[in-house]
Each structure stands twice: as structure tokens, then as C-alpha cells.
Amino acid sequence: MRLRASLLLAVALLPGLALAKGESEHQPPAHMTADEVAILFLAGRYISPVVCKLADGSQIEVQDSVVVKAAPEQGGGNQLKATFFGIQVADAQYCYSAIDRRVPNRRGVLYLHFRTRNRPDYGISDFRRMASAGPLTFNVHRGELQVSPVGTEDGDAAPEVVSFDGGDSRIMVENVPDGSDGAKLVAQYFAANPPDPAYPPRVFTFRVFAKDGTMFPFYAIEDIGRRR
Image 1 (cartoon, rainbow, N blue to C red):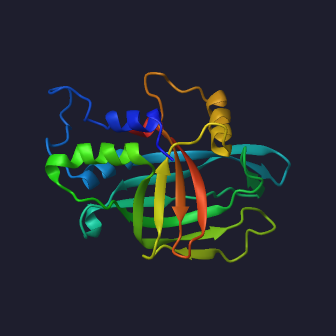
Image 2 (cartoon, helix red, strand yellow):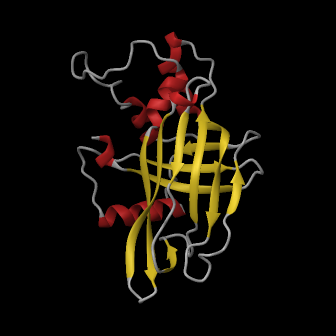
């Protein structure tokens, strides 16, 4: 499935790449490898709206969040660190979203890299070509997530540890298809939180594949407050 115009626009508006010379003191170098562009492209804080019902019958709105940032301190070349913060709500009976009856608590850290030929003179054009061809694949070379139910009844259950150490572990980044469950969730969120047209948030589907082949989607809405 080809990525539509919104993802291509996001590539065109990579921080710094669309600025005229002199507009920013944080401009990227003239030559960047495709994996450096990929890091710049994906880095940010992303949220997905969740509602939790409390033991007293009331409800609160929270955010399931993922923060993606460069991790040069880990060595091994250019890579990203994706931190899943999960959901921690005291006295929650359960948590749900516009599309899921029960939202689990997923917490942990994954380390990603972007496979490419990495020619600095073609980095930006290579990345744009890959984005136009289909979903972007960020391979996970190590990490794990602890997955547990949210709620007073199941909250003491031991979390399931899901390994992402090598194999075919990956996160595929693509648009949120029109008419999909993800589009419903995003539309509901924007209805309650109208975006600023001057700073439109990017919206993606993260399809997260574990080492054993299990998959879950995370419908990611960029936290604009962290980007400005």
C-alpha cells in the first residue's frame, strides 16, 4: 500500500529540510545519509487517546505515549530509541479507546535502525523515494515490552515479556487509512482537540512486530507541544 500525500508532505517538511538558508541555526548538513534522515523524520513524542474507568464510576482521559529519539550513546551507528510509557492509572477498573474495548499496558524500550545504502549524496532523495514506495520499515535489533492488563481485577497479574531481540522484529510506519479504526480514533481525538492549522500534527500507524511475529498497531498522533 502506497503512502499517501500526508506522509510525503511530512517528508518534505522534515525539520530544517524545507527552510531557506539562514532561517534556522539548527539546519542539517548539506549531505545526510538516508538513515540520518529517517532518524530526523521519526523522532518525536506520539500519543494515542485512552479513557480509563475508575473504581468510583468516574472516567478520566489519559494518553498512551511513545517517545522516539536518536540514541547515539548506544553505539553501533545511527539508531533510534523508542520508549513505550504505557498506562498507569490508580484505581482503574479498565481502560478503553474509541476502537478497543480494553487497552493493555505496554511498557519498555526498543532500539531501531533503518536499513539503506547510506550514500550521503543521495540520502534525502533515497528516503523520499522509499517513503513514496510504501510503508517505512524500522528494524528492531533489541529490546522488550512488558504487556499486562489494566484494571483492579487483573492489575496484579504478572506481565508478559515480549522480546524484540533480532529476528524479524520491526516497526512499520505508514498512514492511517481513511475509514479504518485508526481514522475513527484520530477523528474523535481531533474533534475534542482541534489542531492548530499552523502546526498540524503528523499522524501515523505504527505496526509493531515482535520477534515471534505477533503484531499490534499503535495509532500515533504527534505531540505538537514537544515539536515547537
